[in-house]
Image 1: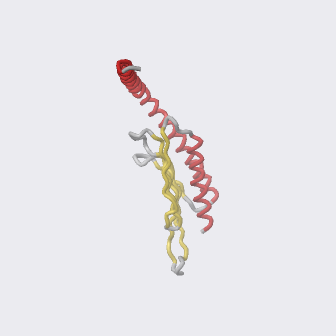
Image 2: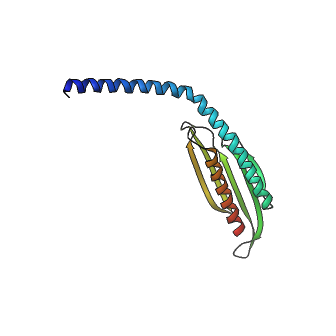
Image 3: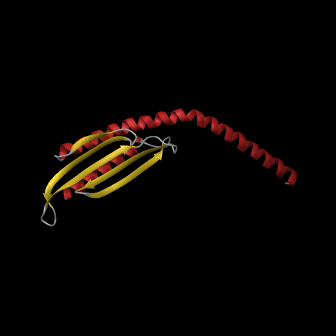
Length: 160
């Protein structure tokens, strides 16, 4: 193949790339609404799932109080309690335990993001973050992650 043919093919590839880029940008503009709607669906479904799972934990371990979380921080729920007990040094004191799981608001990265924090007897157990691209995310994967976090918290709390 001579230089003339290679040059023509290179120009054609560049033009095809430019056309594909313009088509992708048009598709992106159309899908912004789809992305927003998908994130809202995830947020609603996951926050309901978080609430139902945390309330089941509340029913199994007495003393926890459920709090709804909503606003700029995200949407979800938390369980917390304060125990009055003797510490390792024998002195009476109060010990705080809390699990909080939220779905973060949509951001410029177009991901579904859940955040979990767990504290048992004033010691942080976990501070986790899980996210996936909105258009690739699966509800079941997030529900499994939420289940794992709550189960780990329940097991660790029961062990203390």
